[in-house]
Image (cartoon, rainbow, N blue to C red; front, side):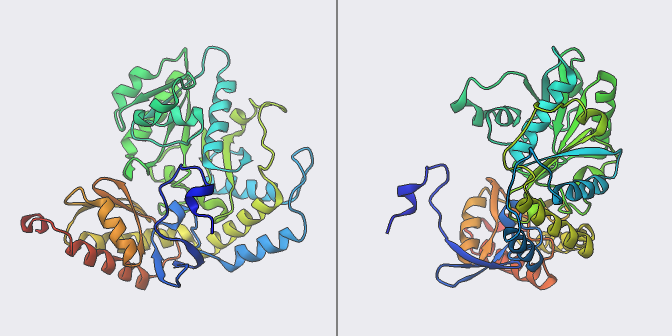
Length: 394
């Protein structure tokens, strides 16, 4: 039998587990072992695995119409776009559909450059951020160690320290900067939330310097943080919002929303994608959004996140818990996050080490109280077995 390493590019480590089935918050491997999924495909399956409403929608659409082309109209995409516009809830906007978060951010970057006009092209983002793996979104990502193997990267990207208003003010040259691109919570950077004071200051600076405020909601959007979008915690109205991950509950789809005035900088031919907004993906998104609204997933994420936070804070070996809603990081008392994540997996719990000392937890938004208690119990048992000095357990 051909092995994983024989046929796939080595862009990921060899898998330690092969999953073959999922249901709600549960996953099952090839041997039938059960796991609690507290990563949700990195905040993707917000409704859990194999949600019947999404499965039925995909099945029905696959028998009806999978794909034509964006040269022609279809019926589902505009409905999904209208729902997203209403959930963002600021000034009316327009939506471009694509296939991933990186593509949504590519769209935002191109839109900012077209909106800014010649000479006003730069995008400022924060150190610790993550915006994608394409060449431009990689350069927007504030992690220089990821840049080096792929130099020279596209020009026009600047980085400033996270939550440093003065540094941003110094970088926001009104003659060259078209936009600021920020996450409400830096997910890959360690689950680091913004503050209201910071984002409101950024909004003011963007208005003063004539730059767009673009919010990357790829990981935080659609109920994950306890509101429909992360920026809604902080009292701001962005000009551009990007999203993906949870939008299709596992079916690849991304979207870039922009205020109508900004979106109208694009003209036919300025941007496109073959698969973006096709009926299969948008049918999955429509079903996902309907269930999210029926279940009021922001409220569920807020309540479940409070329970999970309180339980994690009581675990010996956890020094702090940070994040919003059901996007959380458990800060450990020692830099053993990778070891703990591996041992938790062996014990039947899926989490990941987002830094050397932090575990990320992002379970499905419909997670039950009993599943939260079971997951924290597994993590507590794993941490108790770690060779940490006794004084570090106080």
